Image (tube, rainbow, N blue to C red; front, side):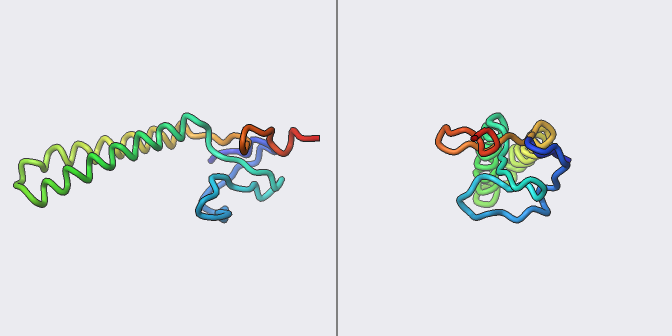
Length: 108
């Protein structure tokens, strides 16, 4: 489980309500502060998205062509699964900053 960067309690992200589709933060149920994932996690998510797009192309080629694309499709999905697992192990939460401003807890 991950911990809140403000109060240090353990957070199960699946149990937290999401504030909206276009919001990239969550709110701690204990201290009511906003937090998000670190910047490295966002880069890993973009890398995963690229792998998924390549996997999709291999899957479409497998459907439209012959079974010669089966091995590349399977390998790309296995790589995606490993990168996703590795990325989730390295994920941690940081205070949410919007437009370069300080987090709410640092404001006086």
